Image (cartoon, rainbow over all chains, first blue to last red; front, side, top):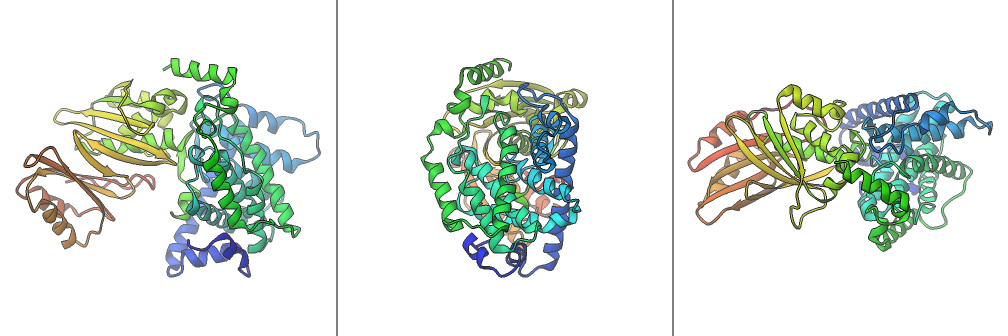
Length: 284
Length: 229
């Protein structure tokens, strides 16, 4: 895809239409095949959620495993079933990931819960069927692809803002389209989400994709839904979307290695964090 | 990048680099042998070694050696599977020098064959094999890979290229290295689709060619494996 986010925002219509038109200019057959594969991805995500909500088995390190199920079964004191569903779904996926269960990287394994948490969470809350998520998935994939064209989406190169920032932006754009947002609104949903993850560091305890990754997917799943809400009300990112991506990439380059998935900074570098790292290394 | 690379791959967690990537490296190594490996010695370097256990790297490597793709739910049971299939595994740490932090040297043996394959997991599930035996190679598993071991003399690359061209096989990348001038050489050729069996048979019987293998692409998930003749 050569179109930029600013280009996509100018499209008069749905973001998914623009993305499909560019990707499959000459091939209706390829488009149909891709849509079929995307449906499979949705089914896989649902499967991860179901398994994750039903299990409290700990990961190999023992740091996570029961959070999604616990939240799902706890009393909702906020009268806010949407909030809890989105959070629980996101954590379910990442805890399945931590347990060596099967998930869909979106765009990475560490950020795999954000999109299903937001998109499937909202869809289930509003009782929409899975087909309603198909075009939104295209939007999120397209959005992610544009980001990926500017930078490598990995904690090691760009910090957590690269992985979770991308997944939250992708999820925000997807939720926006699902609820009737046009291309401009979907792009701005993504841009606002992304803008508000800049500076997020990658400091996983022990170097494992568990703490803070599991809960972080819950937080940024909600963040994505918030952003979609703002965009659907007509709010926009003041800084043009492509420039937001550029800013994120540039901040990523400024982050010291200690804060880019080396386990040498942030919460990974706490006394408890260091102890976990030692314990797991010894246990080999 | 396909839209399915952004939302994908479907994989067993927890880590694209330390689990999915590890599995892919081992899968490629397995295919350098004609018959399944019976003995495997895995030397993990750097971050692969340090965080291997918590990331399931060891399990993913063994699973790949058994032919599992990154989305195979049997990966967490790889050690048991290995016992069942009669694969002896020796897992250890080794400083492999100035290489990517997620690098492993995989030494495989069966009744008639012996090979060592070294590769790195670059992040996001992407991998690179850069050494086979003491030859430098360069392939990623994103395409079909043809390996050809031959005597180092003029015309060898041209012969291989000609066979591929005659069958309309497009070459994506080609890398060649030799032990010494006039000694043995190994080329790794990445192609858009696998060369047909008769082309491989023809190639194998050309003068000065001692060994060929085709490796499947491992990036898009479980497929019908096309066996090398």
